[in-house]
Image (cartoon, rainbow, N blue to C red; front, side, top):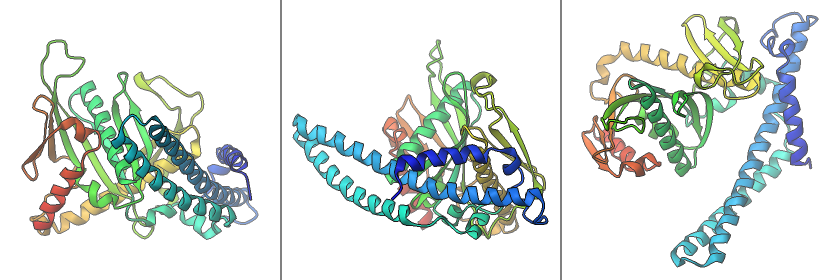
Length: 379
């Protein structure tokens, strides 16, 4: 059975190979004559991708097991301290649950190590259309963008990201940042991430819209209350049958990833910008250190945007049927206000408020989402 360290080493070597422009820029040219160099490069690229995806699943599983082991040790330390009986009891229960989860993961890892990589047909399906994981309707892409309010809006975008990250963790969802643009003070002009591994869309769809914050910013010396906004879009990841992209319709540009202030943070052109020529939609990614992964991330974002545009066009044709709906997915609709001075969050769609704002921003979204689900069910 292969060693995890060997698998990690091979995976890193594959990522380096996949950034070779002679190979990665020609992956879609498989319709050319078999004797052509582009055809050969495309086949090589497919084989490398097949192996890379196979190894990636094993590495992710191994990392999860390692994280659980660390959590078990932390809970054991709480037990050994015997400082708080209630805390020790919780730690003991947590250890049992974690150990059960680890047994399942170890079996899955062993099965993965003995399995074969996916077939060539499955690899081809992962490009151009949607990736293999996009068959799962429980996967979404979330886009958080700072609106009015300058740096304060960017900082609030960071608060919203933290809220969703903590909530996702409590739900057992997996989060992956696809693209982000930081500001000088640590806020976000924009951040895009995907969520998977559960009933993601059925809950996160209620977060789409404009989120308004009212508070005194840390940078405000005069003590004045500022009102800023952040927009959130929740895009279901397309199934392979929903979106089919012709590679000839894509314009791919590479550039250097930049950080706060616009300065370049990498000397190599690893950031990727993909433009869908028929619609004019653009997706970028610069979070990863290799060109291939950023290209994959940008494709995920682009496909979700194309699907959203398609759905909006379809909804406009049948607008009359939406009169009884709240309009969860509209980017421009103000849905919620976060009032720090009154320690209150108000959802304007159902005209209901909740106290303990900080607790909610730390991932305590459950009561709000439950209320929205109940309201929609009764509509």
